Length: 239
Image 1 (cartoon, rainbow, N blue to C red):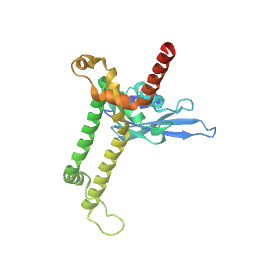
Image 2 (image 1 turned 60 degrees about the horizontal axis):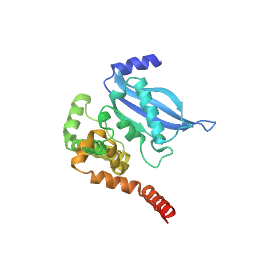
Image 3 (image 1 turned 135 degrees about the vertical axis):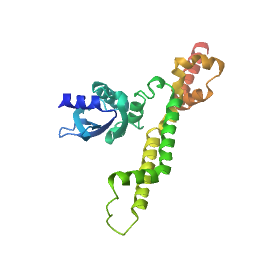
Image 4 (image 1 turned 90 degrees about the vertical axis):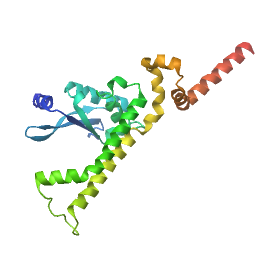
């Protein structure tokens, strides 16, 4: 079965990964890893395996495991969608696995230290989804031509076009909301750009005030503690 899945994934142009966390009878935490893709015979949703994550349930551990899983199945560069349930926030106060995984794909692989670039791509994605709202009539008419008129809905009589317009809008709202929620904490990580060696020459000409301010705000307690220790040391040595 494993080789068959690999062959199918190898032929598929795009892949989505689905991850869910569950606990077995012995209270061991496991991740269910599923791949979804399209073949010549239709949509395939393949359960691949369980992974024991009892000893490593933090967001970065899970993100690393998922990336290794995608590399193993030779589809990291094909990922266009991610679906997480309990795995999204296991042992973490932030929604990082999806974000970490997104920054592990080819889209932003070369910009992993450029948080502002990643955030710009997230905004670009949300703007693209928002623009789909105006294409509803085009999508509805194309679908009707291909598959025929939709069947009657249960309950009070309602114009099918209006019904699916509401559904279309709710789906887009949910995609945008989920995306923004996944990346909401990344605004606090702009200081990571200070580690990007490709920007060092730029920083020599223009000091990165925003990134430095982000670092000070995020690590204020650490800096304050270090400053207090330094003052105490000077007082003891020179008192």
